[in-house]
Image 1 (cartoon, rainbow, N blue to C red):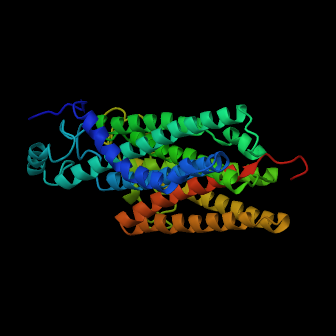
Image 2: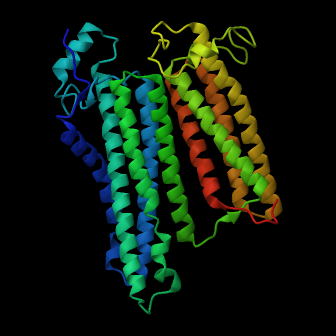
Image 3: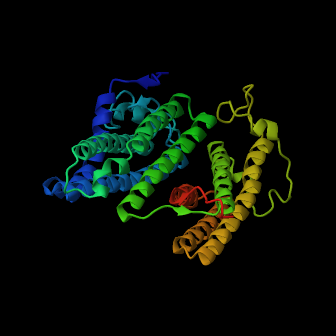
Length: 408
């Protein structure tokens, strides 16, 4: 039987070029929308430079959110090994060049990991990921250049510039996009390991968490520029409320990790009823086997087949944790609503509504996954809800600052 090298760097530049082509459309649109900044006066141009960075950050954030959902689609359609090597497909930059290999693999196992549709899904995911990387690289370079030019103009002490414009370089944050650039490389490495280690559950889960952390980094940047362009200050949040939000955020991350572990171990259908599981409130479960982290897909650390009771433990732990997270989100929403009424901060009421609707969304899609046999639309919606929670809570915490001593 013909074997395929797991890492074949021959097509890497062509794959990068295809990723660049994905990014070219958004970059061209962004540049055309904001090119007028180059023809304006210094004072107008500096302000427009920040708005340009804000627009690019927002667009990159949007495409990163899409990438997270498309990554879930790739996993849920079993397309993660649609091309069994990295970064190309059987050493080619596209499934067109790998047609003979893909057709042979599909003919041998028609429902296997390698089919024409799965190969295209996997490669489109890689092109989109590369495109997001190009956007983040552009954002990083542009941030540093804008910071440099704004600092030069400030040091020149141009008299007709306002105090705000003289300190524009302080409003431009190149370190966040730099951190995002470094992190997207780490996420890409986990993507490569996902293929080369044949969907190793721990690696796939870390890949998901890494993608959501990238989403959080970009959200933090987007909120920073939102505050700068609107010339508003962050809100001093009462320390107890801030502690509640941070604790809730930590619980959400734990729940996402557990959800990723459920998905990557294909344990969703271990409990196909709600609220009980297998007609019991406490079914037979093997936690030690289920949460043995460093093992191959479907196997124990000793190489034996994983038991159904282990899959049940994985699923039921996620379900029990979901009850805690649901209550935490409800409590956070209530505290935000109370703060909005007492401190007269309208945005807090909006944030409260976000958390309520996202919690209900996650509850509904989670139950739908269990009782309807893990339909694709519900699984994707559940992933989107998790990404939405990360985005919303990051935005809220970025909107706030350390509390005043008098605030409780």
